[in-house]
Image 1: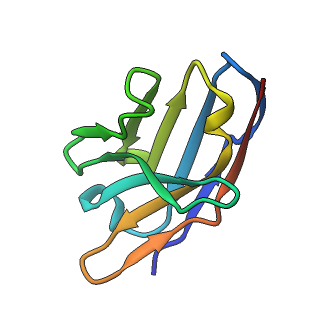
Image 2 (image 1 turned 90 degrees about the vertical axis):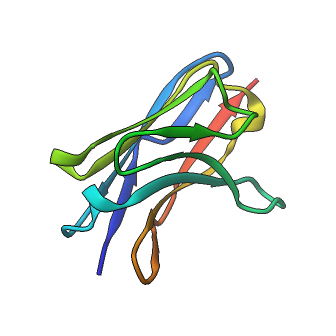
Length: 115
């Protein structure tokens, strides 16, 4: 089993920055694709960014140039640096680990951007 614990969410003004962290338990992390998803009220959960085990990132068009995903395999941690935040970035952000047989989700961390 894998447990994912997110942190770093909060309230920020538009144009500000936040850095989310997600720590994974177990030994699967370094071999796994990691992703950040978000879900705004009344909307479907959407993919924000992903990173391969080797560190190759990909981003949703809506966050390209503003968000950066990274990972530290020695610390079993994935990060999401969010800059120039907009009100439409307000959502619960979830960490995701793609396992060989099943997927794992964190409990989510709230990000609120005030305009």
